[in-house]
Length: 182
Image (cartoon, rainbow, N blue to C red):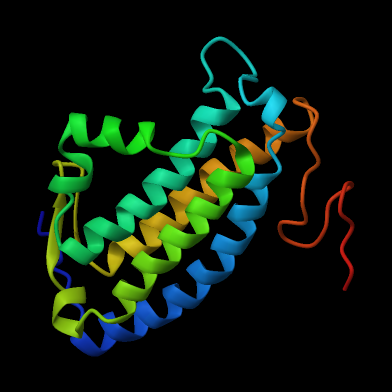
């Protein structure tokens, strides 16, 4: 059996893909910020069952990992942001411990790192980056992974909101708590 080889993306593709995903990530960041801010501070310890993360743990994971993925893309290496357990612990401990503060931290740091991504050269965007044996993608490919990872966990957190006394914001066209305005 032979396997087909895939041609490496061109630098033009890498730049265009980045530009497309940057716009998407800017829009998703606004929605994610609203979901992070919607967690009631008095119920940040809510967890749906004994095996789930608390609302605070999930919100902090979303905020920190989104920023760290962008940092890794900008560094063309994930070793510094994900490979050092002590640095990861320190970063998590430094996060604001209330929902509004975390949402603001997220917007500020996500935007700063995304602005750096906008400045990467097409050659940098096409640089292959390993992710601890799990993935080996060009830098631009991790933008899609970041988008999907963030949306996945944001959906989890949105499901926590009503049971912990919060209101679900309009995510993709309205919710019971925030109907779509058209």
